[in-house]
Amino acid sequence: MSDEQQFSEIERIRLAKLAALKERGIEPFPPRVERTYTSVEAIQTFEKDETKPVKPTLVGRVRSIRTMGKIIFAHIEDGFGTVQLFIRSNDVGAENLDLFRDYFDIGDFVQASGEMFRTKAGEVSLNVKEFRMIAKAITPLPAAKDEEVDGEIVRHATLADPEVRYRQRYADLAVNPQVREIFRIRAAVVRALREFLDKNDFLEVETPVLQPVYGGAAARPFTTHHNQLKQDLYLRISFELYLKRLLVGGIERVYEIGRDFRNEGVDRKHNPEFTMLEFYMAYADYQRVMDLTEEMLQHTAKQVLGGTKLTYQGNAIDLGVDWPRIELSEAILEFAGIDLSKHADATSLAKAMADKKYNVPPGASRGKLIDDLVGSQVEPKLVQPSFLFNYPREISPLAKSTPGDPTIVERFEGYMGGFEICNAFSELNDPLDQLARFEEMGRSMKADDEDLHPMDEDYLRAMRYGMPPNGGFGMGIDRLTMLFTDQPNIREVILFPHLRKRDE
RNA sequence: GGGCGCGUAGCUCAACGGCAGAGCAGUGGCCUUUUAAGCCAUUGGUUGGAGGUUCGAAUCCUCCCGCGCUCACCA
Image (cartoon, rainbow, N blue to C red; front, side, top):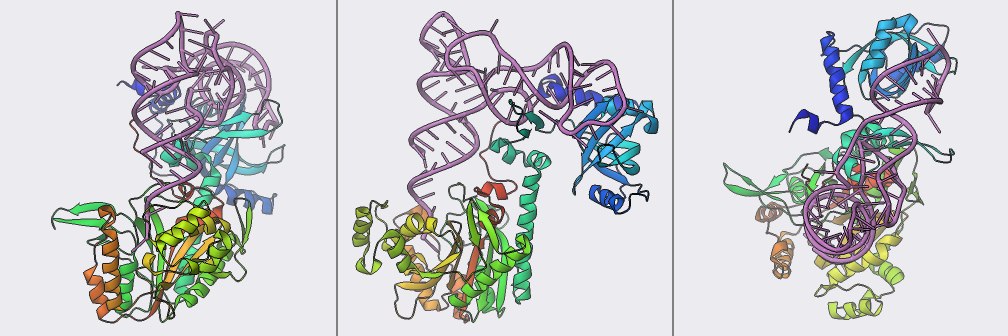
């Protein structure tokens, strides 16, 4: 394929400009640049006292150009804001003005020096004395100004196609400042969580991503292989079993923030790799963890948003109140109209659900049915932050049973904005009970080979050395970020979300 | 995996069986205080791909590719 075919007309023109610059002895990609102020610093410094000269050297990407004969106005954008360049033939010389006009394009990175001043229209700008190219752009940025037909609404037509936005996130970020803001908030969320846990004496650790035995959650793993060891390995689906090994080792409070990988369906709440926070706290139970969860998320909201109130998809949410704690069976009675105490087995519960016209997966266990009820009838209604607690044992193999009822475990999930954000329990620390649970799971899994989970013998050995009673917690950082940035889709808070491969 | 929808110029979108268009971007020109600059001129398309129906297909049909929504799946 020739260059003629693989480059667009605009790109060919820009390549010609690039060649022309080199021809004139100008290096379009110099190795070093100078900068004495950011855009915002230059403007603010000047505004403090406009009688005092401010002579900055600025850098940035050209975002607009308005040529008016012997003067040129252009806006450049750096990582902090934008600033207008004022380039006048009288100041830079006719030759340089022509150079800018003929060879500089929107998208190019430039360096410019001069003196700050205020234009007749009132905008603080740089009166340019010298400028130079510091990086030439070949491909035009996917943005353009747009004009409403009836002249009412002013709108810039920037990249909107979700497919291109995700596949070419660099272009999305370059033209959509609100997208950059999402990832600043995301970073602030993680920072605030870390800060909170560090302050509460939790030790941050890193545990293996490549695991010989996967566990700690219900999901199919990604499989890989180590050549020299001649052994299959799995990308972790959770950190749980490794972090709890550390409790055995005498670390009382431990947490990890990192990536989990689950080989499952992709939708607006699921990406194959996602960021998880898990912490484990010795000598705490799940009620104590609920208290800490409330505190942690209130702290995070204050740090990130400056307060405890946020709006998610049109719903006002306040994290600042005491979160309601609703027993799971009560929530199901209230929101789904089914009294679990009257349906002690799967058959009976399935019938009750069918009577209510709820979806009933065939062959599901009672625990699975309850989980489905929560997901379809309860979860969407939990817009304000709240906890559901006391879950069925059969869907919680790592949680400790309640003292009064062996079929129920001390587990809670936190909900906000109509979806689950965290999952926690009083961790099971009895190795014999844990072995029984694994065997139980193994049996119920045999019906479906794909989901068969291996037994983690080493984890059981660790438990036999003695594990302190503890409360554990897991939370999806991506989903929390969705709430804090009011985004309906997880792809909006992941820089490079997974998409199907496309032949180009 | 199922259902529904979408895919047209660099970007945002029209045209919906009858000559493939607009705004912005680009290119050439005028313009020394613009900022949606303005004015004049102008380039740019295998309408996601392949096949079919038709005198004629961006438009209708089939298949494929990709994306979105949704359902299912997801201890």
